[in-house]
Amino acid sequence: MNNPNLTFNILTFDFPTENQTFYFARDDIAKSHKIHKSLFPKEIESIFPGISRAC
Image 1 (spheres, rainbow, N blue to C red):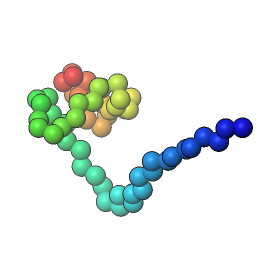
Image 2: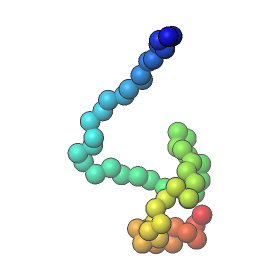
Image 3: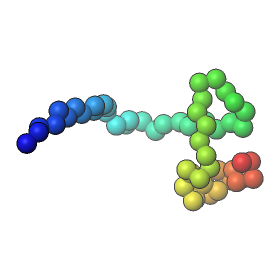
Image 4: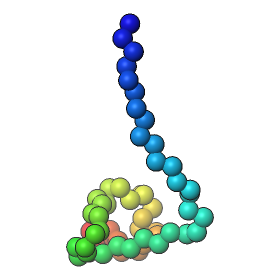
C-alpha cells in the first residue's frame, strides 16, 4: 500500500482579549478588503442602522 506524504500548514494565534474595531467605508481605501453584504449577519441593520440603504 502506498503511504501518502501529508503536510499540515497550521497557524497558531492567541484569541484577542480586547474588543476589535472594524471600519466600513463606501470608497476604496488602500490596503482595505471588499466584502459582500451577504457575508454580514441578518441582524446587521439593528447593529448599523441604514447600512442596507448604503450598499
